[in-house]
Structure formats: structure tokens, C-alpha cells
Image (tube, rainbow, N blue to C red):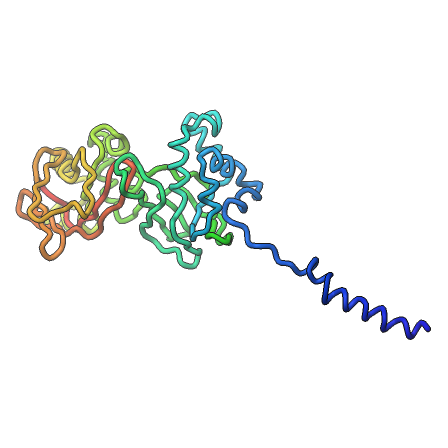
Length: 316
């Protein structure tokens, strides 16, 4: 009798496994969206609270292909302290919303596809209501965003995109933020911060006289200038010469994007002089000495202006 019952018992178990019990044990839950992942992570409670306060929970729950750089709780605490906020509730909602959107890309980018260069976030700054802010990603020695925020964890998959964790809140970038973040502008930064120069960092970080349009010479452009003027290094350029040259690369009161550049456009600069932009055969600048510089990269959008890279230093 016992030998007879054994196959019946195993048969009963099999029937249960293949019928009603199958429904209970093998149902795979639907993938979570970005907002749900953030809500479930104990190290992202500040981010979750910020998303709720800014009214972005629906955005990060909806279908799409987003990339979110998610600041840790410690990152938010540092941000609040550095900016004089006692807690998240004291951050103006409009400002908080743009800061959070500055952590979001409108496309899904996995870690394997991250490359050095500029991408556009979903945020918009005061300089332009129609242009999204630029983000500079540097993959040299890890992944660093806008020169300050490091990626600490990658590829947290959601059904509407991907999350990468970061160790600092990514503030709205100014002209100075993007100049210092990109190593191709390191000589320009050295020139702007030379101890005999005006407070260019303060000027180009602020909003007085903004928005700014900056035609930024690359490191190679400065090297060519030193050869051209027979100077051994940047320090050998006289104070007045360098100050005038740097001011000559800045336009105040206008966020001039590449689609606003026209042929034979006369541009008045912060220095007081002017130069001519030509667009025939590619965008170029003819300075006051009839020297030609190519505009080699365009539309790095900042919160207080826009940057275009050029391959020759302009001389007034």
C-alpha cells in the first residue's frame, strides 16, 4: 500500500506545480520605473524627497528612455550646506526643479556607451528659455560630470531608462563651470585666473552683464599664439595685452547660439572692439588684425551664457 501511494503523492505535487501553484510561484513582477527605484533605495531618500517637492515624480514614472545621475543622501546634504539651505523645503521649488532636471538626459546611456564630451540635460537656465543646458562628461580616470561630480555606481536598469549614482549634486553650470570642466580649455582658465587679471571668474560665474557669449580658444590655440608672438609662455604676455585679448573673446548681454550667427555679422565685444563673423565655408572669425579663427565647436549652453570653441586666439 505504501509503495502504491508514493507515485500518487508525487503525481499530486506535479499537478500542483504545473497548474495553480505555477501562478503563485513563477510570476515575474513588472520592472520598476526610475521613480520607484529611487523610492526604494535607502541612500536616495533625499533625492526622492526632492523629486516629490519639485513635482517630477510623474515625469520619472512615465514611459521613456531617460538617464538619471542620482545624487546620494550625502551629496544632497553637502549641496544644502554649501548653498545656505537648512533643508530641502527651503530650496525654491522652481530652482530645485531645474537642478533635478540637470541630472536627467532624454536618452538612455548605459555605462559602456559613455564617452567624453557634451550632452544636453532636460534643464534650462536663465540665459535661454529655448536651449537645454549642456553637461560635460569626462571619462579620463573614471567618469566625472561638469568637473565636480563623480559617478560611483552604474547601470541600475529601470523600465524607462537607467540610473547612475553620483557623489555630488550637479548644479546649473556657468561659463566658468564649463571652462574649468573641459581640459581642452585649461590654458584659457590659467589665463583668466592669472593673478594680475581682473576677477574674470567672478564676472563669468555671475549674472551681471549676462548672458555672455564666449568664444573660447583651445589649448592648441594658445600654443599657436605663443609661437606667433614669440613668447616663451603665458606668463610672458604683458598684463594689458592679455586682459584686452581675454575681454575681446566675450560678448555681454546676449546668448548667441550657432543658429544666430550670420555671414558678415559684426560683433561688439566686452573689450570694446569688434570682430566679423563669416559663415561661408564654415563659421570663422576675422579679428581686428584680419587674422582668421575657425569656430570648431558650438553651443555649450550654460546657465548664464553660451560657449563656442575656436582654434586661434583673437587679438584686438
